[in-house]
Image (tube, rainbow, N blue to C red; front, side, top):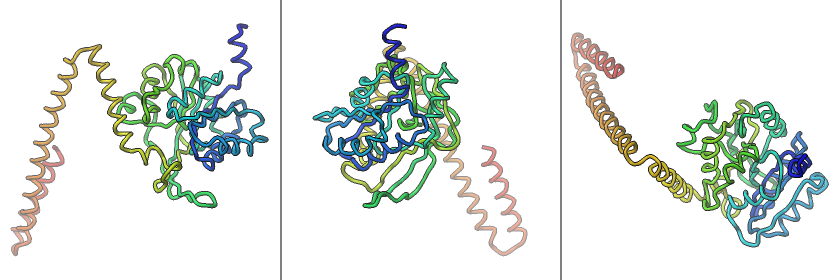
Length: 326
């Protein structure tokens, strides 16, 4: 056995990367979520990205007995950004599987059991995502109040590129992937302050199949609509940044496509879409006009006279049938 193979064999099977900054009570909850896993062959790497070191060390110390030596803490004096923190954590591990467990999210106790078992049974897949539930919460002095639970993408049956092109259909807390896939892709793009997970998922699904475990939610994406400061969600508090960086990613990928294939196909597709949109608007204008005619007929049919009422009703039915056919 080669030395690299031996080190991989002796390393924990799963590396769990948790990025945090000045959110000790959320970090404590995240660590408890990891400790509660039925699958035990993991290592937790906490990357404190520019936050108060004593807060992080204190939380980890409180959980030390339950962690059983399976944790490493990395402190950055200055914040390097979310994707750099992810790459930093991955670089300090040598596991077969990797997952990003942000400090405000949670797992069901069998998340690792189910996802590791799936990848063992499907060696052709580069990763696996699970059904996820969005938990809207309000933090209190005693803990939290759950405001609402909403399934994330309840109609999704599989992870596909065509779906991901529109927006990110799954989130880091739900995704276990192989280190070999991460290495081939070159990790996360550290130039992206936000949407780095979506950009990574796009590159991932181009190269590898991603399995999907639909059914009971195994991951919980916690969001706080009213939180401010360090405990706010980046998705909610930084919505403008998400739009800006999403546009940046789309523009870069489009430029790469044009450099490889030229502007011709893109111009053709743009013109085709313009023609179809023009036809759609014409159709909607006709429908609007016919609806106005129906309203007029119904209004007229209320005048005295049975035959007039019958004529109005018949005309309205004919108009409705024509609209439905279109």
